[in-house]
Image 1: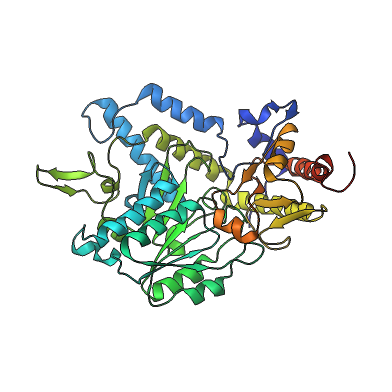
Image 2: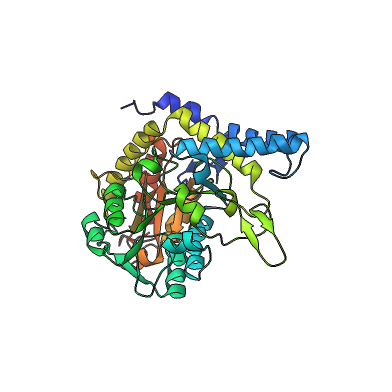
Amino acid sequence: MREPLSADEIDRIRGDFAILGQAVNDAPLAYLDSGATAQRPASVLDAERAYLETINSAVHRGAHTLAGLATEAFEDARATVADFVGADVDEIVWTANATDALNLVAYGFANATRGRGGAPARRFALRPGDEIVLTEAEHHANLVPWQELAATTGAVLRFVPVDDDGVWATDDALAVIGERTRIVAFAHVSNVTGQIAEVGRLVGAAHAVGALVVLDACQSAPHRPLDLRGLGVDFAAFSGHKMLGPTGIGVLYGRAELLDALPPFKTGGSMITTVTLEGAEYLPSPQRFEAGTQPVSQAVALAEAVRYLEAVGLDRIRIHEEELAERLVAGLEGIPGVRVVGPPSGVARSGLASFVVDGVHAHDVGQYLDAEGIAVRVGHHCAQPLHRRLGVTATTRASTYLFTTDAEVDRLLDGVARVRAYFGADGASR
């Protein structure tokens, strides 16, 4: 195992992020919201700007020099991202974001159920009573598309329950997966609790009954080594803006033979072989899913973000964040009137923690911390069913990344410790 990031290394990393050097509300910025959107280092910003200033052009279309160079940069970026997650280049599809990627898969199943895609697509067709297995902890992006698919096809949604801390058990998931299961979709890492799923056991159980596995990797791809082929999942999705890259680009991974058989749901130019007035024939993956003008400069920037992460080392980033998570959770658990959701201290989790402050709404907690220059996320984090199960409307979430320091976590803990008194929720008069 490689050594965790040293304090000197983190200081050097922070120097690559100009935004971290500013003051917010007359206090040094402590950015603890990378789980929503991560900041971008100078090299990523420079890579996109250099592309736009030197070779910006339409890809896979023009015959001139700039078009050729742009296409080469676009496809080199695909290869870089493919290597990053243990995939082949034809298994990586550019999308607008992870939500778009998950919708692509769900609507592909819907189109197959309607008879689109011919014989190769029949493996995706659903019948009334077929089951789609999810957990109660899913982000809306990995819930609502499957709700729509069930409503369209007559399939049934089955849910793995969570406990009072918002954590679900692998054994409970295995009990839900059965002979009628056709799809198993879950987050590798929960964006609310930080729980890390046992992917291998779930994949084995799903494949044993002929089901396909869809992995939401939004909170794992930026933070820990990821080998999608090694994990055995059939599809996976993640976003560029959570991993030092730009907004407007996401990634869908799919096993090549599945992508080549899945019917597209976005159609138009650049994804076809032949078009007549009566119909069209589609290219193989990945181009069959990339209709219209693509996010080319964003792909170039995302590839640079991948190179940055690889240079630091995803295993070292994972260790650093898990150590921060332990410091964060243990500290929050020690503050009276604060309840942390998710695994308790001492249990491995990703580098984030969501919590409730008794008597104080999460939005007020966030505003109090913001006044001290500490940026956190407040709300239901696009996971309303999970929060409803926890009996709260909202939580405050602090999330870390490779540039987060122990001192920033301690600033958060100090701020949270004063919140109840500030709002008079501790029973003392102000």
